[in-house]
Length: 304
Length: 275
Image (cartoon, rainbow over all chains, first blue to last red; front, side, top):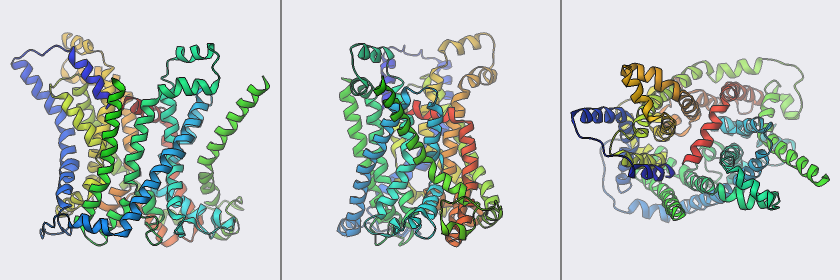
């Protein structure tokens, strides 16, 4: 979004290109260069995306051409299903967890690393290690050696498996995902904080501001756009959560950790109700779209 | 003075604590991968009595890691090549504003970047299955490339913005042909960008789960991580073997990451700041 705003500023002072055969040929070559990126994105992402929009109103099974329009039936069925309500609630819990815990850890560690130039690289590399590993690997590590009541850390402490209880399973999955994610925020926040003009920081210190005040009144306003962008990304990803829930709990036990992502997936690939899967996919994307619109609105107000 | 020292020490303790949070699960993998199952059941924290490679041999064989490595390399390689070609070409055009519709294309790419996988995976799967193209790592590589192209194009565009506009004109004036312009002038300048995009996109493709697991169900075509997941079905109680398998998957990725960490960290920081 920022890139576009920056681009439009430049555009106003650019000179209109001359018309001529040379220009036209160059223009054609430019479109040819940009075509592969656009074609791949349109064929693989956008067209199936639009199809999902249409499929949500049909009873398609995913195989064959036996399609019937069913209107809003899929949405009515889903809204009446108590499992959907659980999923939506779980996505909201997921959102609250991810907007707070990793963000706070990320801000604390980034602020501390700001002054420690020599150790900075080492800490960033360590913090990012869980982030660069595959969800499958991370999930299986936690499942076998930490959450396992027979041989894992939980077992050694005499506790039951958190993934097996209806009250703890969602938090168990969210815990692993947060363990994998927070280091990314440290690196992003630190990168943004380092862009803060040093004279602002020095001026604040000369004025007698202590560490907390410098953070609160100089660094925090300076990284506001980044905080906002990460916040919106977190909102979008929270409604799309899938990997860690699917791998650690399969949405169970008894649908207690079901999120919309696993709920939709089960419709498509267990009960072959692609229409319903598409409807849930549409609802999930709608929340993400809402977050994007809110983001555009807030950042536009910021620019004024 | 004393409070200042205390505060500095407290900062170090906090940083070290979170380093431990990140590392302890990985250290548990390292320690337990050399232990027998009985040793692990006694305590997951104890050090191994003997260093035996047995767990690793079992994991390698039953996780089909040999084939998995090849499939993962082919898949990620496809994604990296397709993304680098498409995004550098598009990024070059967008940075130079060489087409009048460039603002519309930028808006399109922003929107494409936020389209979730769950919004297009179901019809896409049906189409790919109808074309008999499931269980094909190259197809999955191209799909993952399409997902990564918008963000990679934005990143490449910022790298091309650093190329002075008159440099290109000057080179053309000097009688340099287009091929030389690309290989001698443009590529050396944007090389760090290509490495950054390549590493981040490569990691994304290597680690991806939702699309890979849906489109690659035949064990012969499964990636490394999917092979490890399949192995869990049989070996979930053989913790030593599971940990050895995890270590085999962790070490190469961490080695690549540490070797190229500068590019990964820069890419993440700049990508987020630029939006």
